[in-house]
Length: 223
Image (cartoon, rainbow, N blue to C red; front, side, top):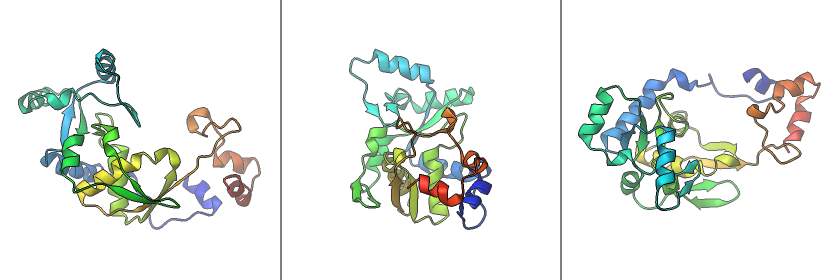
């Protein structure tokens, strides 16, 4: 990937940060949130959550990542949580959204290129997962941590991640991290309008290079 980006004419400052080499730093951020009572362990599997949502008397509230978590484990006592963790039960760490929103002053917003300041609604994510048994830190925690650490002032990414900015601004505010500006660009799609993705075996930069395209031709495809 780095070789292909260099071929395209992109450059970067210093070594590329590899998140799997910095898990202790993310753990420290999680510990800080946990010490403030803003995280809780969740022992539910995806199947457990699906059953509870299906059994609910009310229609499930949709969030950006699917139906909102119903808060099953939020209601567990401290003793039960400790006992289940001591037994080695797999669990995720969820952000207590109500407690997190109560811990910040006022409303959140962010500066989006070409659109001015946009108001945030992190509550639509519900009690978001910030760590899982198979991933010691979630994307949401890692990127906000690393943006702050590396002094990123403009986050540029696909428009499919625009909703996630609401949650990222909440994490930044809770942790006292600086607020960057944002620019969410349109996605590259195939002729049918479907987003180009690895899972669909869409053409990669390496494929385009092998087909004889020049860097300027590839850049023109994205314009």
